[in-house]
Image (cartoon, one colour):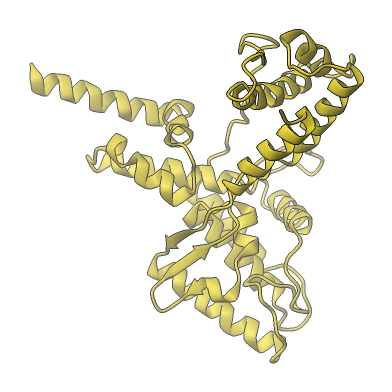
Length: 311
């Protein structure tokens, strides 16, 4: 039988081949394997899993729960080859982190952000204002993850058909994202300005600095926070507030509300929205139905109409 370390390596290789990156889980499970070697233990037990998970003793419960979940996931896999493996019950170290409540930008707030982006300083006829104008606009109308937008390469944008190819997504899969004609026009204008700015220099990514380098994610967030403060979305000293990721939430909620208001069966279309957003599980998309009072009200109104039609 393979050693526990070898079994963990095989498990991680299998999961990664399916698109899971497992950065934190991989490091933690290898640490767990070292712990088991020090204990001279050949088989996973709930007692040992708990002992390892609750380290260091002064960590937050969320940290302990996450560590135990890593072992639980591996144990469920490993028990098929080693029946003596104990799978830690799901009720141990229960902790459910609060999901950040999304901020739903109004149409006016999005317009103000885009207008302010065009005021960014970047010398005479600089590219930076147009880069942020196009980037923020794209995030607001497509629901792309920030990292997905920043990784877009020039050849991922088909302006003839109005389709983006999104690669290297959260779970390692690619998907096609159709865009509206107005969005295509903005990207075409940006592409022309980009070409003029670069003056023939090669640059693979769509969104670039004036020197042709890919945008840095941290710098993008700092610029966004600055723009948010300039239009009053954040206080000058606020460390929290609307996020770039909230554009994604806004897109999903706006789409669902549009379906409900037009009489479309939103529940039946959820898999379509889930695919468009790049969600692995439709349940991730269902979350929006319970997270927003307006959507819940529209959903309940639809249920009530169904009952009225049957009565």
